[in-house]
Amino acid sequence: MKIRLLLIALLASFSAWGQSDFKSYRQTYSEFNFGATLLSEKEMFGGIWPGISGLIGRKKFYSRGKFTDAQIGSALPTFLTAKIGVGKYNFNKKTSSSVGLRIWPAHIYIQHSRPTHLLSEKSVRRIKKRGSRINKKNSNQQNPKSNDINPICGEWNFSIEVGAGDIPPTLSAFSFYSVAMVTIGYRIYFDLE
Image 1 (cartoon, rainbow, N blue to C red):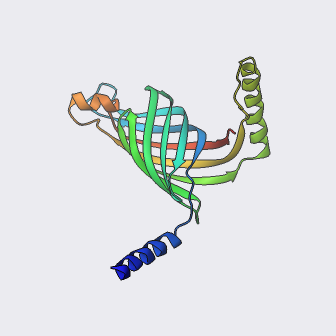
Image 2 (cartoon, rainbow, N blue to C red):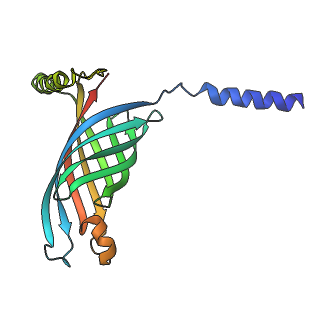
């Protein structure tokens, strides 16, 4: 019995020995996208249509290379858009890939991102100037938060999405009659602390 307990203790210590202590963290970002969607030919306005969106989002790493991603924002022509997904970050190539669900308009997506590393000094100055204007407006609050905007880096992303545009009308309305969508976007990460 003692030998079994010793073996179990040894196996547990070996499995814990190879693991590093990981503390989950979040990244906040803003993103601008442009792209095109293919609307169902069954609809009056069928064909290819352009679209744009501006979003805010948060990426949460729950292990070294795995993350969840959620974002919400305004878009044209649907007025609003939101999506959630899960992904994997490659630390060697500094790229990430994710899959998920765009909630509105309903699509399933695959996204690949490639960093641009640090932003240019001109971009950083412009973003900080806008942030200081926001801080001045918020400085009259009783308990102002630390709203110092510090842009860290940028990232290009590309996504391919599939909607329910050619499925029966009751379901295709959830995807805004879109059959497929392709987007290219640029994301800026911030350190808000």
